[in-house]
Image (cartoon, rainbow, N blue to C red; front, side, top):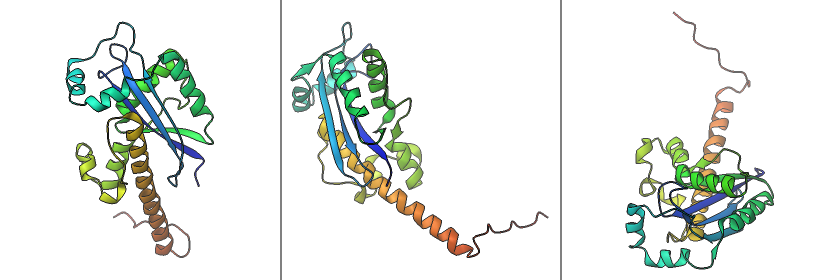
Length: 209
């Protein structure tokens, strides 16, 4: 079993990039490779000073009144919430791996906030993107790797509510199901390689003409 802990993370924000816009809420669900949910963390944040919502995201949030209400209660100062979060990640019983979909959005926000308010990131500079993993596993073109095209058995019965903790848990279970399939594919490939050459030697290449 891997010693890595997969930290599925979801960010809710009022714009496409941090700084000009604010992270409203974030949550992480920490999973082992065999899909044990071992810990969660979530926080709703006060807005950044001088930031403003982007018109596109502002309009979208008006269509999600329940999720908006959920992310605007019990607000915390970013410096306090992010410091507690980094401590939480660093206390997990394994090497933390940031997992998201799309990681380019969620990790951008989380990395910026951690560096701005804590000065370090326990995930280093790396994030594991579920969409990229699906691209490698399905054989579909990258942009066609969207959830409706994923195999149905990758999904558990978790809601997708745009409440950060709900979505982090749902996304983490999805990743673990994908990882289980990936390990099975790797094992089958290794077995096929052994069966193809019982001597254990690499097959000789055909001579060039």
